[in-house]
Length: 631
Image 1: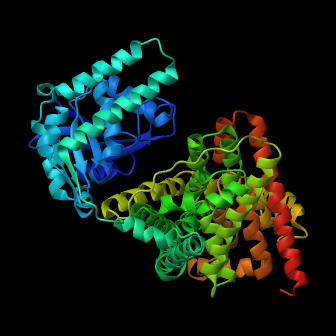
Image 2: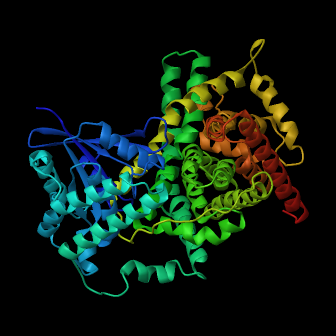
Image 3: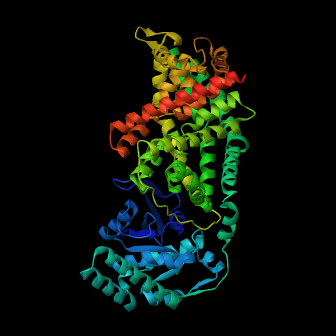
């Protein structure tokens, strides 16, 4: 039998994606819609021996085709053969949500109307009579609680049994459509037409609600009560910082770091010993033993040990997002962002930058003005992305073991502060424009759906694993070659090509406290991908001497790395190195994205140079002021 094609549509924050995750679980693929950066989610389910394909369309408030999301939704619904379109409606905000429903019905799209969050509506004293709503609209109506497996089974039953061709709009909706067509055919201006159409839509919605919905006055909602505390004008920012500090303590002290330490011991001690012994006993050539143990295991292993930190951090951020708190951050930060000439909405791409700079740069498309978009593109790379996190975690653990979480948290804050300062400078010099409007809906607070949190965590974190298996693997092999050969053949590491390149780079840091060729090589490799800074350090400082017997040659890679780093860095120079790594030139992937999004080589080159200069100056100040203070 043919696969049933289903599309989910609805406003943002209606629980649509939670329903999608409940229906499809891990049987889903995440990509991008052609030509845009908006997520494309396609999942699969099987029920009653029927295969079901489900597309989670981007959340949108209308289908006027003014934004990429709106255009995707209307184009997909109008140009694809679908068995069923389910419009997910937040039952607790039914009046606002029905605006999109009415627009879809105007386009002749038959709908299954899902009144989701029925439990929230009940708590708010909102009672919806499904039968009366069906009669008012002429379309089937179902009530669900998004995270409930019972609701998921109910929907799958409907998907396999409902024939949408059996339904047609009610007479009330047909009369509305005729009225809209008359308005569009009138000789009035476009703005007058749109105003009248909007009034007609809300008149229809008012009629439908009067017939099917009963509302009790229950006073303040739970979310409004919580916002009186968390979004309080005085306490909001300190609470936000305290929450983020808690996230870093969970990541770097309580949960993430202990797991990372155990993984480090497993990879860089147990597995490294095993691999070296096995290869040596098998009579493998010394150069190949060195390549595998020093290059691949030393480089890739150094990066893999930070996987627990990446996943724990992403889990915490996804959990916070699921509660509805992350959306409040835009409002909390709006006063600060406005002083930089931006709106609070500009904080959203910056928050995305904590995961990866590339989608954060692309996410600037959602901002309203050209000024906001360009400024956001050029300052987002200052944020501590997942690729920079291993650098911060490594140096903090090595040189500040008693305050590792505090130091890493300080690096994150320094990136935010520098992004804000740069935004102010760019907004008042290169880019000058009128201020933008700021409109963002606050979703209700709720307990996150753990399946959605885990899927989102995996979706974000797996990119790090893919890099470790591809880019970092290739980079580790290349670094091993460059560190073991020069143009005359095999050589000592301090005479290698990598030493020469690192030496050239290190000349820039004579007054920064880390003017060694190893540091220069690590920073140079970081322009390829920030993770390779740690991979390079793993190769250069964690390499064992495989020219002797394995039992004597293999020492703990972690101990060797620590010893090697201790000879090249002091605590102060390590801090300066961290600051430079935090702020300097983005990786080549991010630079390519800047070129694409900003519209030319000029802005890519500008970003590479101005960030390098800022990082050089700030790192110099950290080291020299630290020396003056006696550190």
